[in-house]
Length: 165
Image (cartoon, rainbow, N blue to C red; front, top):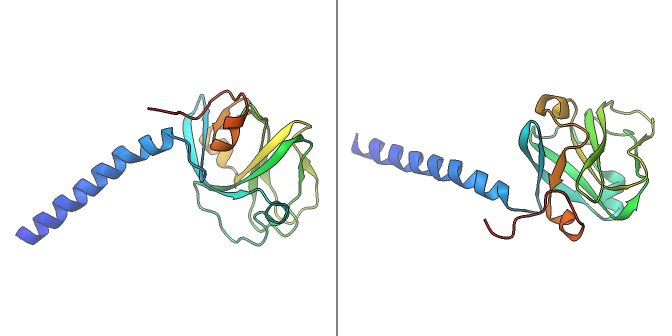
């Protein structure tokens, strides 16, 4: 019984530490986390970064699943018109277009797999976040919300990374 109590105390400590650490980690910028802030509060997504032409070309094509709090962040050197399609993409996606201010300028909700329809977010797109289809609606993410990620720190963004907490 004493071993069980000791193991239980250890697990409780781990759970307590993780529950305290996660919000602190989320408040600081990390390359593999993008945070979205709006009337819904703050939502964090674990992201893979697509910044090379090869990575951007292939994106999430061929993936059979994507974690509920996961996504892919496409980064570009300068704002321009960015278009996506869902050819060879198996799962429905919400495609979120971002300006260099970190503000969401367009959301393509629940883009359907395998379609060749061109999806564009306008002429001033510097980054695109792809998440599971319907996630933006479920989480309350809307046009005008802002994101925080180290990529945007080189711009005059609306929600900058914290240097010190």
